[in-house]
Length: 134
Figure (cartoon, rainbow, N blue to C red):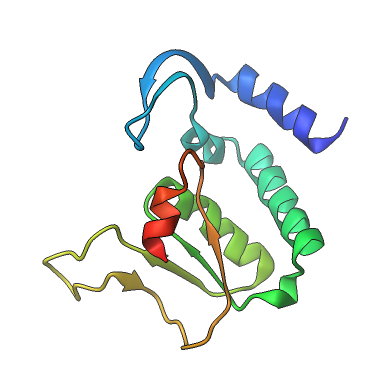
């Protein structure tokens, strides 16, 4: 069985796919919700997902075509962290807004000017959270 079909069955069986009335972070309404936050609770499936993402990135753009992986908190950061470990690429994350404690950084982690970055998030509805990170 290919990964996509196998993973779709897993999502359904694990209860990650929910039906009802949901308000998404974009403000849009949806009749279903895919809760990828539960996937790390299933380490074997989570690892398969990360490996599939790594393979997809490798085939589509190549692992040498970027220097760093970036994400936005919170749920996309879990996926990006695991992908960073598997690809042996540095990880940064971009906060939605500057915090008023600690260092106050919007970008957490080290990045060099001119770095080529792959942005990772858990779900794409409008792409707004990733667009804001740019």
